[in-house]
Length: 382
Image (cartoon, rainbow, N blue to C red; front, side, top):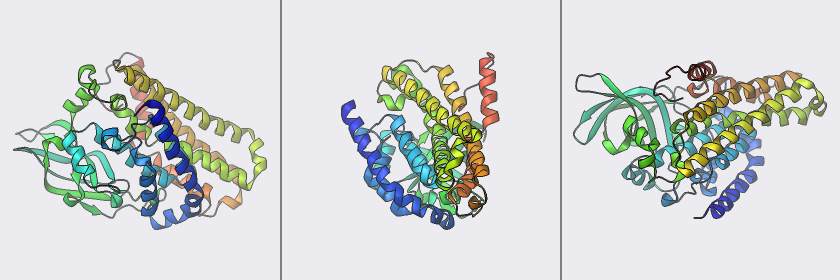
């Protein structure tokens, strides 16, 4: 598919997303009460092609510009952060699956429409080598949208023959191999249904794992030449931006809710400043993504400096968006105290969303500072 054709197809997907927004807005409070995004909404997004934006063309996807994907996430999150969050992660997992072995991709795709991938990248499991692959056992505390998923990408430690960890690996596991543990009941972001899960002694073929060897190959110029440009993007970028774009959208939605109730506060300097911070954050993120995508198209060596700056800007975008939601709530007055009010829900959701490990502001800024000072920051997920 040519780039103009892909762009046109992406535009159609985003038009379908926009058409869904009024109904999503009306049902957003119920998503929180029910503790889950409506399965019918996910099905509608699937039919629209949204989850195929970052999927390879060879598997029925669009291989779209990642900015277009995150634009769709931003739209969804304006009316329901939980829906935008789940959709963002499910869509980002399509990107991750695309850099797995083709056999793993074929197994997942055999499930047809409605086959979603959840994840928990914290190293909650242990992989023990056996002939043909590994035996996996572990427990993971949270996994967004796990009740809707058919597969899960699970962070695990690969052990050597002496039981010592030698690598951090993502293991791709079908739902038949894990048990969901209903543990998710936070103050905010209840609608993402991030329950825990457990695996006991499940066999994982070697081709359904992705560790340091695969990460190195994905970022090596020679081996990456066989990949489509989208899948040459820095490994950490798509994952981390997937939990930042929803908060930018949520902040914009919070502003819309504020001025719908009290249009006069649009002239308040603190409100204007907060909204400007949100808009500037989106411009930073899209600039970084666009430049990284251009490098990927040319198969240039990864610019670690740009990737690290993109990571810095991503967490600052989250921090600014959460702060802006607080400003908007303060400006709203008593009418926003009702727990079903969009501003109240956005504020509660944001407090939980910023605790995601990929949104850790201080840790990420520390990494950036050490890099800027010329210190070794090791081979890690920036």
